[in-house]
Length: 73
Image 1 (cartoon, rainbow, N blue to C red):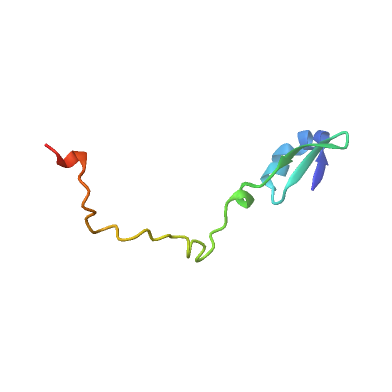
Image 2: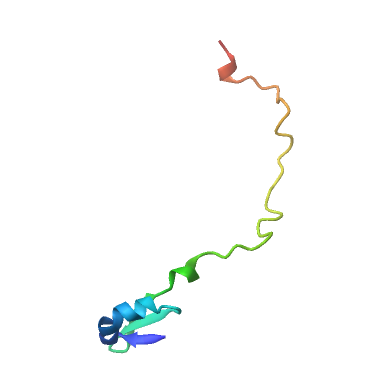
């Protein structure tokens, strides 16, 4: 949806209350701003979206045999 800055100034509270789609505000026909409903910017959760993203780097539970500085007294 595209509206002029003059129209937006007159009707801003109602436009923002009823905001359900992206609005482009123009000044003398040139786009100067865009208003986007906040719900449309939230990332959508996709079931199983993180599947196959974990990379196993070996056994993380067994001792490595390395001495740590914290072990020295």
